Image 1 (spheres, rainbow, N blue to C red):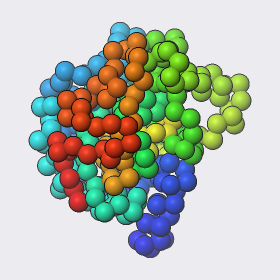
Image 2 (cartoon, rainbow, N blue to C red):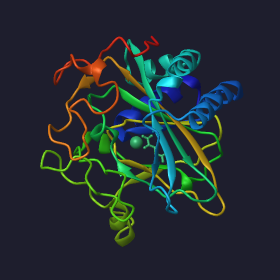
Image 3 (cartoon, rainbow, N blue to C red):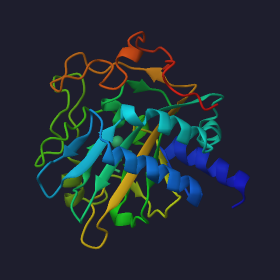
Image 4 (cartoon, protein in one colour):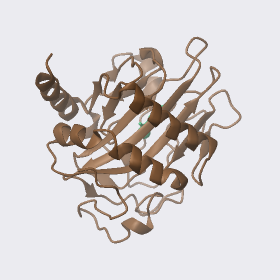
Length: 282
Ligand SMILES: O=C(O)CCC(=O)C(=O)O
Ligand SMILES: [Fe+2]
């Protein structure tokens, strides 16, 4: 496929399926710079760093929006053609960078990242949102990110609280504002075809781009693929809106979530998602 056909394919796949693999997006030098920011985050955790399922076989290191890494990340995303990628993928004039998330599953431990939608945690609506999922190892398909095809256009469920190692659907917010997540893994064990799951083996330099409103989860590491170092970078474009989270949350979330809450205080439901703290790339 030539470059222009690849762009058309990626745009259609992202719109229809919610996710697409972009092979070889990062050259080795860009990938190395992503890795050094990732390593800095793991070595210098910020206030929201969290060990998922701490002390169990499922333990995964996770962090969102480390304030100490903000300047490095803004410089990193400005130096790599993410602006061009997302302007093409969405058909958006403007592109902004939101923040990062890190995942580390090591030594053959680190369970599945439970199925969830990022939009249960983040006050986001509209088509122009994307996660760039970057893993630094060559990831076999069975250990990779999994997404449910087309689910970015489906129901928004409550999140998982990521606390109950036995129940991956334990609600984040609770109450009745959002329906409880289905237990997708349990349903897949009974009927492997119940959900149309997409996943890709990836090579270093590949990125998986996914709409954060889709149902997605991360397969575990195991005895043959023992370590997964993953950096997720999040972006938004013209057609992106503020959508408040439930007014009641068992997890103490505000209606703007837990990230950049003060900077988002001026936004009401349906407003364009704009705030000067987010780096404009285009
Ligand atoms: O890599 C993973 O295990 C999960 C990724 C994820 O949840 C995300 O990209 O938002
Ligand atoms: Fe996620």
